[in-house]
Image (tube, rainbow, N blue to C red; front, side, top):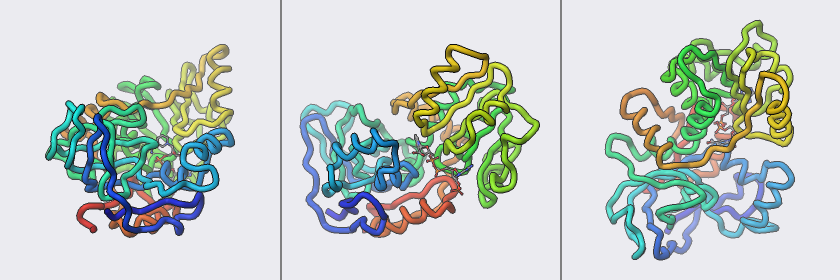
Length: 329
Ligand SMILES: NC(=O)c1ccc[n+]([C@@H]2O[C@H](COP(=O)([O-])OP(=O)(O)OC[C@H]3O[C@@H](n4cnc5c(N)ncnc54)[C@H](OP(=O)(O)O)[C@@H]3O)[C@@H](O)[C@H]2O)c1
């Protein structure tokens, strides 16, 4: 089968489009013919091992100490089940599916073998009403957005600021927060302001012009999706009982979450999203009711995965970048 293979930690130039062996399935696995996948910021971070020291070395143990060994990247995917193992009960051949394969990855290949129930991600049925491309771009950013909004108890009338709102998590978070009745301030770069307003943001700010921590306004919830704001200045913009969250927590955030559990009324919450069937179903419901649009910026064919990774790293991406697999081979 055709796939894009990852053999070097570092530049996207090293991703190679080539013929590889088609995967075989175990008893409780399904074989999916991939129709679409995506390139998320997370995929680029995995490729370059842009992580804190400990996680970086744990990932080296998992993928390969000196280099990843013929790994096929791509966490998000949609496709059709073409084969099932004897122990599979949830799926049958011909089912349309979508989800996230977590660290099993595999989206940048014609076929991927996935356990029907996996600790690392979640695969479920794809309804006809959503395209393969949109379904592929829904799970990871969408579930992270849902999780952050639930943990912070955003509700009708909440004032929320989302920093880094123009990407995969942020575009979903703006819309879901509006659905919950919140008043949303979205922060990102200039090119994304119109898109964020169109998705429902009440206020859209360019971070190159306005440093949100210097504003007069205060918020019930601040979600720093990129984790680049200064923590204490961000805390100063929280109302009493306000909550601060980041999507990519570092050690300093975890430390502060412990401290704020014990002292003060403002809280830093660090809580990792788990990928669940309920989460995916809730996103599908919102999509089906016209409350969640999947913002797709560009679509690349499988052979151009390296170009797509460069594009995601170019700071131009609005929302999501999709890879079409089946139609492009
Ligand atoms: N995607 C997921 O589901 C997921 C799940 C868990 C954790 N995470 C982590 O969360 C982080 C964000 O994920 P994502 O997929 O949403 O990334 P993304 O699609 O790249 O979106 C991030 C957005 O933040 C903007 N940004 C960059 N610097 C900024 C700054 N200083 N102030 C305000 N905005 C800024 C970026 O715009 P410019 O590029 O134009 O600057 C971009 O639009 C990543 O580190 C990822 O690993 C992601």
